[in-house]
Image (cartoon, rainbow, N blue to C red; front, side):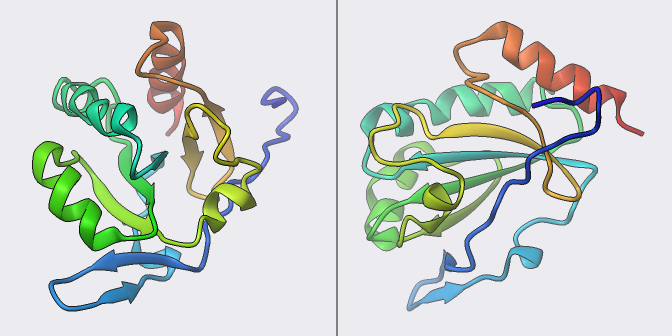
Length: 155
């Protein structure tokens, strides 16, 4: 990414994202997922990945400690069975942000990710969905610092 020249790749949200109620899966258009704060942090994970789901505890700590400033946090969980995910994993860990599901895997494909990717990724987006930074902020303190610097520098 070449931020100095203003060349930012875009993050692509799938139009198949779902939220789940007690009785049915509901398709959610992207514009209704988040409030469009100045920036959003999007984390994509495989819903059946035990490592990914245990990392949600670290997300709790990051958000509670204010390490992501005023950025809105959105979790896209890729799973074929969102209701089962909610019953088993979400009940154990919860998430400190908005949670939507991609039961088709399109979000990963649209952003050049696949199931062989160890961690699908965390992205810092501006309000135009341009990727300002990406990387594993849970395991790399320098990457977390980069995210925070960018968040703090935006008007």
